[in-house]
Amino acid sequence: MTRLAQTAGLNDIQREILSTVRDFVDKEIIPVATRLEHRDEYPTEIVEGLKELGLFGLMIPEEYGGLGESLLTYALCVEEIARGWMSVSGIINTHFIVAYMLKQHGTQEQKDTFLPRMALGEVRGAFSMSEPALGSDVSAISSKGVKDGDEYVLNGQKMWLTNGGTSTLVAVLCRSDEGHPEGTAPHKSMTTFLVEKEPGFGEVRPGLTIPGKIDKMGYKGVDTTELIMDDLRIPANRVLGGATGRGFYQMMDGVEVGRVNVAARGCGVAQRAFELGVSYAQQRHTFGKPIAQHQAIQFKLAEMATKVEAAHAMMVNAARKKDSGERNDLEAGMAKYLASEYCKEVVEDAFRIHGGYGFSKEYEIERLYREAPMLLIGEGTAEIQKMIIGRRLLEEYRFQG
Ligand SMILES: Cc1cc2nc3c(=O)[nH]c(=O)nc-3n(C[C@H](O)[C@H](O)[C@H](O)COP(=O)(O)OP(=O)(O)OC[C@H]3O[C@@H](n4cnc5c(N)ncnc54)[C@H](O)[C@@H]3O)c2cc1C
Image 1 (spheres, rainbow, N blue to C red):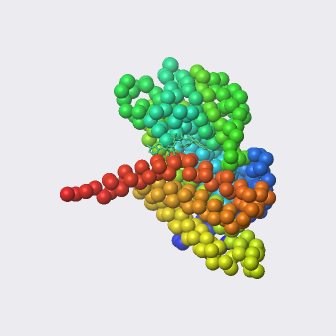
Image 2: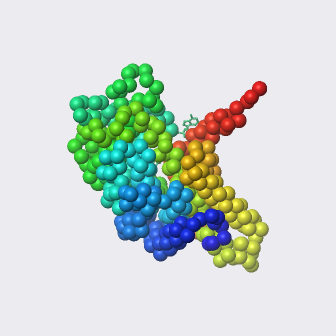
Image 3: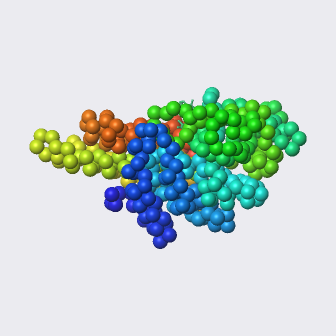
């Protein structure tokens, strides 16, 4: 498909990167995605290919061995990858968020230590805010880091870590009371700890356990886990940015760029669903003609394509706003909200176009149908996006009476 989801104004390098990624997706991801997904198998070969393409370092500055590309380039790559298999974009996304947080907020020593190896994909990032009792309400975090000499002692349980098993560096958000007396506002008493660990499951470092993979309805292949800290000792130089009390802002900054990427994933999955629907509609005949010739199906295709276009335009706008150095929380919230809702609707329409075959595991749309709902939840639910959008609108359109 070439007509939809085009992006005007890209430079030669961006066009070349995107064409290479699209080629990789068509040849190396789409042919194997559904088989691996049904087996819940980690896509090791695909990940190796992504490393060779330099995608783990796409936005890491060149001085640290990355490609130094913009958020827009990154988001467009994510869109392409999600078109092939959403789980693969999940493997890169948490890595990207941690690298971004290090780049924006890390001390020089932290950047020098981690970014060059992250650019190569040797160190792989995950980020951890959610706990069993909370996801949307980050201010309720109960995991704690307490200072003990030159170290912090971390205790608590975390939930829903994408890449929890395969990662080797986890940015963990904890409450830290050191220097922040009782009664300090929750967002001023949180700290991001950079926790290095071995990949795998079980006790991956003294005091740190990653139990097995959570069994999910979709978004398979990529490992999602819990993380248990039991007197986990972290040196003080692994506090992100070197000072406690900034963790909430650092994480929100990371999640904001993450939202553009979830929007990009929604765009990619919706594009694939459209491709599958428009192709099937021209092959399946009912009442003497291809179903694409029935107006009801053509209307569905028209709606699907319009949603693909609208979501892509909003995602690109949000990425460009961030790249220009402007605040983009409004645009990122809108793009994430719209792209994830439209993705679910486009996938549902493509599923309906497939009739009974859409329900068969032989058809790719079955996988997309189980994947799309995750985008309604990750990086903040629709309700949370609407809260962000609403608050920002009231700031922008303050009543002057
Ligand atoms: C597959 C997967 C991967 C994930 N990966 C990660 C990860 O890598 N790192 C990480 O930290 N987290 C991760 N998460 C967690 C994810 O961010 C949370 O699930 C999400 O933020 C929602 O939180 P919750 O599940 O606790 O739902 P809750 O916060 O309990 O919300 C439940 C419902 O209530 C609604 N709601 C909540 N508060 C309000 C309100 N004030 N007003 C109106 N409605 C409200 C929500 O929109 C939702 O519909 C992942 C989740 C999944 C499913």
